Amino acid sequence: MYRVLFTMWLGLMNINVHAEQTDIPLGIGDAVKVVVFNEPDLLVNMKVDANGVIHVPLIGDIHAVGLTAQQLDEKITAMLEADYLVAPQVSVIVEAFRPFYIKGEVTRAGSYDYVIGLTVDQAIAIAGGLRERAASDDWQLIRGPQKKLLTVTADTQVLPGDIIEIPESFF
Image (tube, rainbow, N blue to C red):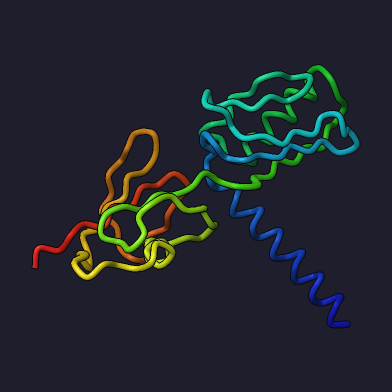
């Protein structure tokens, strides 16, 4: 009985993670898996390359940067349906997002694996916590290809590729 309930719970957790993944735009370096039901020759396991594309058999190169997993799924489905398959069932799964970066007054500045739902406070903890002279607020985050600068709090959500900067306190 417990095994059945545990299996059902794991299934629900997997659905929730996949739903959250669909909201995050893909970027260079994200590991993507494309599965087409009953078409093992069309399986794709690769990272989004430096040009922002993935290669899908039959279709060729597809620009993926900026698309969510759901949008990429719909794009591949439409392209396969247009010329190759009748009602293809495509699933796009993000196996790993690009890292986030943290620098400044933390114990271990550097790049770290992104985890869905990550906050600035959790990122600081992953980096070993704040140093003695770290500012307790006025933290900044650089986001996206436009390098948008944001002032953030401990509860701000971190996205893949974000750069968090923790400045030194003046007092």
